[in-house]
Length: 434
Ligand code: HOZ
Image 1 (cartoon, rainbow, N blue to C red):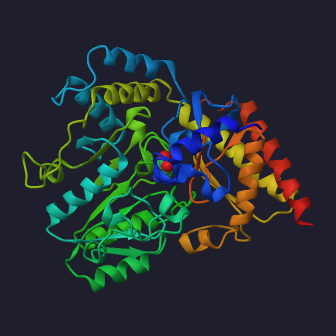
Image 2: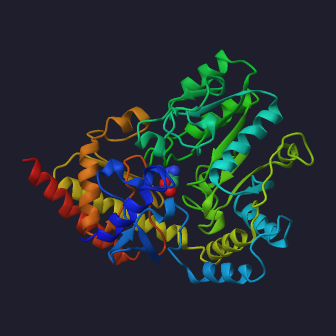
Image 3: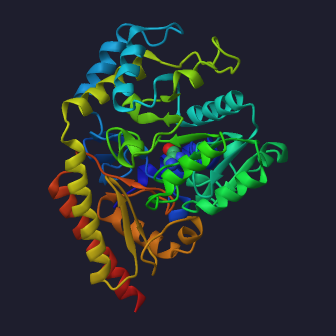
């Protein structure tokens, strides 16, 4: 695999951007190679600037349910762009997208559009604090809710990839209001509530964690969080930036039948363009300015291009009601194949999956339920696996702390190719280990 041009681009970018990138995980440092620079994407495939192609299981970190450059999404963007790219004033398109979102997420009776998942979670936290009049909140080790100061405490994703789950620049004052607990452990949450009576505004959780690899909630866990929040008059926030329109059409809240007070959504409702949203009951949402006292604003919020792309994306979901069943079946086939490949190579590991998001963990354990267990997995094996798969044209997330995403554009033969590649890579790893 020749990557000369990618390396040239990387060295050029290193002079312009810290680490040569505009978001840390994509620097590929943890997989010990230079990043690939992308020329284009088409369906399930990515093409780099050297002309190599890769079957893409990152999918822009989740939103590309129907693959790259889907004609209906491109057409919507094109049509919208001809009418202008930004107005800083309301448009009917925003209501159309919001009505569609509400059909899938009835808990989001009212919502507010922002520009990213990070903005959505930051704003939802401020709203929860403003609504309850309380300062503290609970998050879970290994969960990542974007790069807002309050959330960079025991954070997952890039923060974890580079060993900085607690970022420099976050003041002690900010961090003291962030209480952390172990994911899938209700007792710790109960204790935090008991030790901080009437002080906790909300609990925020990735209902299925994607930012430390795919870690599903144990049966009853999300219901338990719901009850603890109710008992303590705190709000429950589901960060569905990854799981929204992914693990079910109505996200994790539909799949696990738990209704949060607030939901945050990200790039998927922009068809891959920069968008986020947060929403909940009218009572809570009406605390936002200009009706209420919680302030939040943005010129590009509800940007017409992003709204058009998002509307096209949600219409695709609406018009393809069978898509989640197909993704479930394909996800099962792929993950069963990967699990068998581990067995054939006698390499300890498990593949965890919820719908079409999944992760292969190199571990002796039967399940991975929290961050400590994730951190105990074999990272050297991950690096070898990642690079081996890349050499066989399969593009996985360049970090063991990210989920993989499969979409409707991945064909049966793409899945067969992935399983075959994994079998070969794992057998090579097993041989080399002897
Ligand atoms: N934090 C994103 C995934 N969890 C990665 C964003 C990026 O590097 O593009």
